[in-house]
Amino acid sequence: MPEQANPFESLQAQIDDAAAHLDVAEDVIERLKHPERVLETNLTVEMDDGSLERFVAFRSQFNGDRGPYKGGIRYHPDVTRDEVKALSGWMTYKTATVDIPLGGGKGGIVIDPSEYSESELERVTRAFAKELRPLIGEDRDIPAPDVNTGQREMNWIKDTYETLENTTEPGVITGKNLASGGSEGRVEATGRSTVIAAREAFDYLGKDLEGATVAVQGYGNAGWISAKLIDEMGATVVAASDSSGGIYNPDGFDPVAAKQHKNETGSVVGYDEAEEEITNEDVLTLDVDLLIPAALENAVDGDLAEDVTADVISEAANGPLTPAADRVLAETDTIIVPDILANAGGVTVSYFEWVQNRQRFYWSEEKVNEELEAIIVDAFDALVETYEEKDLETFREAAYVVAIQRVVDAYEEAGSFP
Ligand code: GLU
Image (cartoon, rainbow, N blue to C red; front, side):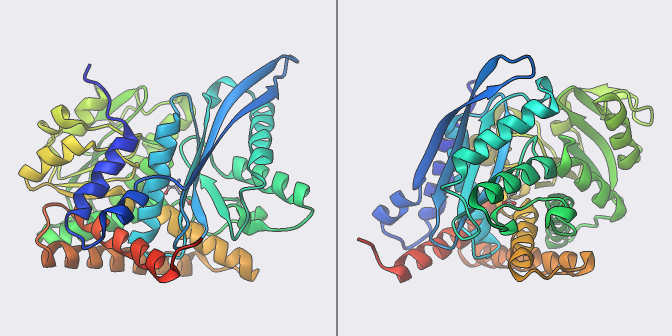
């Protein structure tokens, strides 16, 4: 098995690639390659049987030049300090790509949540919220859901924060449920931007999305919503996978029924409309028009990229392609809509949620989706303009060129302190 790329090194390589096309001094770029600060904490939490367990947790605040730090918190046994640092950097360039007034941050707890009861998870989450309390706030740092976290965890964090601060401040965190001050459309937002980005890329290539074949790797929130929405747009979902394996039917299947099967059994595997069982790797290399990687980092490395045949890749996950994979796919003219644009719907609707929380005035789902559509399409157009103007090699480079310039502008306008 080849050595896994370090996501933090991947982020830095992506920044260097783009910096070569920007007129920005090297010392300023150096600043943009490292987080401003990282909290590392050990949470000691009582289990249901009375024993104590220690959990390592991180929060990386990468850059606040354009606004409060913003980004999710993931629960996963493979969380590392470098992974969280990389993810916080990707958030910085994501909020800049879609031009919303936020910085970048990310958190994570090293935990496999499937091994703990709900009350244990609540205590772990509240213990982390207590550690985060001095760092977060609606004008400081605003966490959100990420891998294996959702509305439930966000509500616990909000409640812990508000209780300790003796205040009401729903905008301290986003991705809450509606009753706790969440936004319409937030759950679907990441999948929605992934498919809008795919649609724009097909348009750019002069290809029809109607009837196009689609493979989706990862069937969590981002993956399954992407599958559902792309099916509604007239494309045909032929393959999907999760950590237990993949399913395939060359004639397509109903992505909602596949999700129901996963809800009932824990996996898409065994879903009877798509009986052919394939591996996670097969899903990535199938002969399809559109590939949506929607799981974790490093899904496609340089070797696997040799076998990827999709015309368009829309990255629902963060960091699913390594820089080596990017180099291989640049040679084959595959259009890759990078994560910092394709999955930016999540943080964009988080931004809407925060705006609504601060105004104490809530929008309809229709309005949320309309505003989201406009932001993603504008960001895509800005990316294409830069790609063509600067004659760049990849869409990723173009997104970073746009995003880095925006962060640099904010930094330089502010002047330096002290
Ligand atoms: N975790 C999501 C992301 O990676 C959403 C972050 C947010 O809403 O702040 O973009």
